[in-house]
Image: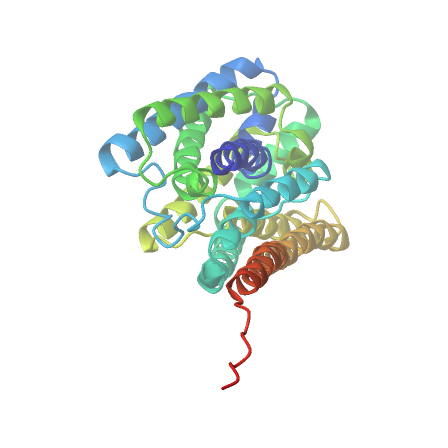
Length: 356
């Protein structure tokens, strides 16, 4: 049964995390290449995926890049407790909620690491917000103004080198995201994965990514397209480069897993507010509302993560405790009956004393 839970958990986590987290990383790539066949984009993303996973497995010696060191498999193996969080991710993804899969999945494996992950993720949001705001407001504001104007006029002529730059930026960002979030998927598999298991895992990832690319991102993609000028390949290139460097910084900082979702939302929020202030192309009220909704969704996901992390193990203990109690009673009753029988059998008749 434990092996069944392990496989089901891995499959659910793979799909849920790809649908919720990965599409946030590849969202700008999809939106800015919407006229290209989906399978071309899929082959490109899977090529980067294969390289990163093979490098981790064969060179680093760990496909999760050491981020599961503090998250060992449960002593009794994978149970229903670890399988439930991916189901919540699927439900939230369906409604377009950018939940942190890092909190939702890994916290159930070891709740004691929640504080470290939360601190790193909050720092990630703040750093991404600050970097994006500064760059959009003071560095590339002229470029963004020109990009937006050309889109409005319908005369956007994209030079070929922008296409190459955008695909290179996507490869950079995608690789850094994989290093961070593969731990969320492979948490369900043995820490020392066999070669056959590794090959099968890659195959599963291929199939899931094909479906996501075919669907063009699903509900989570709306978070990307709702922001200013996100379908422009030039603007997407700048965003991907920033996102990739922020993730690279945290990858080198330490091996504590973090929420890439929070980094993503911080990046989009900083850029959106900076462009709104500089270009005056939309009302601040609308920009704040858009960014605020994203932040509220992320907090809802965090609340659900914490609730599941502490509630599911407690429910499991209650179920096991009740089962243990029933088993104990079942054992005690036959034992008591046996004792009574033995006592009856060992009783000897007492002879009356002889009269002398």
